[in-house]
Image (cartoon, rainbow, N blue to C red):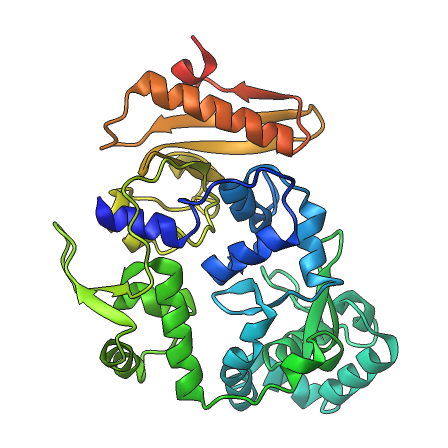
Length: 393
C-alpha cells in the first residue's frame, strides 16, 4: 500500500487542488512533477493531453495549457515517451535522440530521397520563408501519397516528419484539425535553451533515468526505461551510477518480485484521498505492467480491438478512488446532444470499497467532467455491473 502512495504522490495526486483558477504556474508545477504529457489524436472524449491536468487539478481553461506551447514556450512537442509535451528545459536532454534520427533515417525517407534528392533542403527553405506551416502546405509539390495504408503519408509529410524527429523543425502548436504546425527549431525553442550546451549522450540518458524516477517515485528498471523509451544499451550502468550517487535506493515491495528503486526525494504520505478519472495515456498508468503490479488492474486500451471482442469498451478510463482503482468507464462526449455518455461502467475486481460509495463518487466525478467539458448532462447506458448503481436504479 505504501508503494501506491509513493507513486500517487510523485504524480501529483497527493496535492490539494488549487483554491483559485488554474493558471500557468499550476500547470508548470504539474509538468515539473510528471515530466511528460502524452499527446494522442483520439477525440471521442477529449484530446489526451488535456486530461492529466483535469485529473489532478480539476476543471481548468484548456486555453491556458495551449498557451504553454504557444506563445509562452514553457513546453515543446517531441518524441520524449511517444509524441509528448515536455518542459522546454528538457530539449538538450533529448538531442541525442535527434542526432540518432539523423544517423538512422528510416527506409521510407531513403525511398523518398531517391525520387527527390533535394526534398529536405527544399522543406527547410520552404519553412524558413513561409513558416509556421503544416505538412499539407508543403504537400502540393510532393504528392506520391501511398493509397490504402493507415499512415499514407505523402513525400512532403515524410520529409517534415524526419526533420521534426531530427530536431531541425519543431511544432509551434497543433491546429484545429490537430495537425502539427512547424517552424524552424531556433524560432520555436527559446534562445537561452538553444544556447545550452548539448550534454554527452550518456549523461543525458542518465539524467532522464533520474527524471523518470522522480516522476514515478518508486519503480522497477523496466518502468524507468519505459518512461522516456530509453535504449537497453548502457541502461544498467545508469542505474548503478544513480544508486552509487544516492539518488536511487533499491528496495523490495511486499508481494512483488524484481528490485524496485525509490527516489531519494520521494514523498511517503500516510494517506492519499485521491479521486480521478484517468486518461488511457496518463503517465500514472501508461506502463501497464506497473499498473498491474501496484493496483492489481489488468488494464489495456481497446481502441484497436474489434468491437465484438472488446471487454470494457472503446475509450475506457480507470477511476482512481482513495488509492485504489475502483472502476472503469467507457466515455464518449456527445457534443451534439450536450451529453457525457457513459457507454459502460464496470467495477474493478479486487477493490474493497463499498459499491454504493464507488457509484456516488464516480457520479460526482463524471458530473464534474461534464461541466468542465461544457456538456449539460451525464447519461449512463445499461452496460456493465456498475451501470445500475451509477444511474441510480
